[in-house]
Length: 163
Image (tube, rainbow, N blue to C red; front, side, top):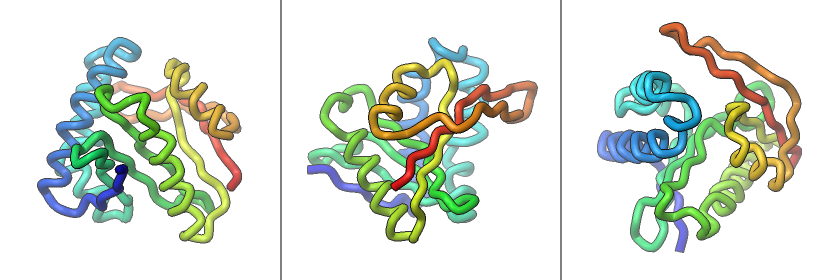
C-alpha cells in the first residue's frame, strides 16, 4: 500500500534531508558532479531549508510503501499552475509504481487547487527523467538557465502537462 504523509515536523524534515542525500548523491553526482550536489543539498534539502519552504507554502510529503518511507515529493501553486518541485523515489523502491502513484497524487492535488496545469523543471542531462515525464504526458515548453548562487547554474527544460 502506498500512502502520502504530509511533512510537518522537524523529524519529517530530517527524514527528507536524509533521503535527499541518498537519492541525490546516487542519481545526480555522476551526472552533475559532487560540488554542485553538495551545494544544492545544503541550500535546498537541509532540514532547515525544507522547514523554511514549508513555512513559505510548499507542500512536502513523505511517500510510504508497505510501512517504509520510500521517497518524497514537494509542490506548490505558481503562476496559475501547480509547480512540481520534487519527486524522488529511493533506488530500493524503483520499479514498483511509486513514481506513477506520486504523479497521480500530485495531479489530484492540482485539480483540488482548481489548477489545470502541472509544471516542472528538469536538468537537460537527466534524460531518463525527461523520458519518463514525456511518457506521462509532459511537453517541453522552454529552456531555462537558473543562477542558484556560489557560481552554480541549473540548465533545465521547463515541462508542462495540461490536466
